[in-house]
Amino acid sequence: MDRIQAMQVFTRVVDANSFTRAAETLGMPRASVTTIIQNLEAFLGVRLMHRTTRRLSLTPDGAAYYEHCVKIITEIDETDASFQAGNRKPSGALRVHMPSALGRRIVIPSLSTFHQRYPDITLDLGLSDRPVDPIEEGVDCMLRIGPLEDSSMVARRIGMLKRVTCASPSYLARHGEPKSIEALSTHHAVNFRAAHGGRPIPWVFVIDGKPVEVKMESLVSVNDSDAYVSCGLEGFGMIQPTLFMVLPHLLDGSLKEVLPGFNPKPKPISIVYPHNRHLSAKVRAFAEWIAELFDSMPALENEPRTRESTPGKEGRARRDAVMA
Image (cartoon, rainbow, N blue to C red):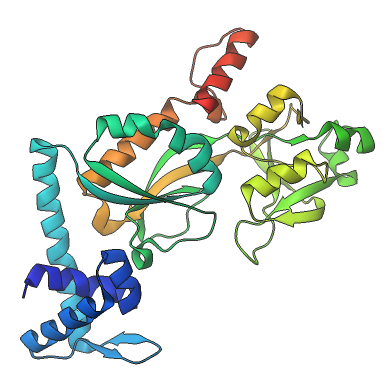
C-alpha cells in the first residue's frame, strides 16, 4: 500500500465529505477510493470513519489521524515546492475557478502569455458565478470579486475593479438623466443578486471619501453578469457594472455613463486558495501571473496608475487594456 497516496485519499474524502466527490477530484474510480480507505483502516487496525448512505463522520481515531495526515502532506508539498522553485519550472494540472465574465473577457484572452511562460502547467478552468467550496470540489485557487468572508482561506488582493453607473439611451429618453444622487429616487435599476436567493447588491457611491448606500427600485433582478448588462442595454433600468463589462458599449454609444461626478465604490478582486495550497509552485506561478495581468490594466482600476495622458490617448489605452 502506498502510504502517502492513502493519506491523500483519506484527507480528500474527509474534506469532500463524500467518496464520490473525492474520487472525481482525484480522477480515480470510486471503487479505488473505497478500497484504499478499507486497506488503510486494516493496516492501522482502527476504524477511521462511520459511513452511512447519507453522511460520513470521523471516529475519534479518524479525527486524530486526519490532523497528522494534513501536517505530513503539507510538509511534503512544502518540500516539493522548495525544490521545484529552485530547479525546474512549475508543472502539473491546476484547477482554477473564476467568475464567468472575468474569465471570458480578461483571463482567457491573455492565457497564451501564461502558457508561454509555464508550458508544463495544464489549466482546468471553471467559469461560473456560483459559490464554490475549493476543498470540497478540489479547486486549487479561485478569483473572487468583492469582500472576502472566509477566514479559512489564504487571500491576496490583486486589484480593484472600477465600476460605472450607466443606462441605455432609450431608458434615458423615457425617464431623463439624473443629475444628483437624490434624483435616483425617481429612477429604476436592474438589481443584481450575487447568489441564488440572496438580497440584491446595494448601490454604493463614494462621496467625500465615504461610502453612501442608495436603495434602488427595480423591475428586474438577475444573478448573472451578462444578463445584467443585457437588461441595461434593453432599457429595463440603470446598471452599475464593473467597467470591463461595459466599456465596448460605452465606446459605441449603446450605453451612456450617468452621474460621472459620483464614483461608485470599486470592487476588490482577490486570488484565494486553501492553506495547504499556498506553497504549491503551480499555484504561486498562477498567482504571480494573474497579479501581473491586472497590474498591467490600469483601466480597470478606480485610480489609474499610469501618467496623465491626452483624452484621445487615454481612450485608446483604456480600450487596449480591456480588450487585450
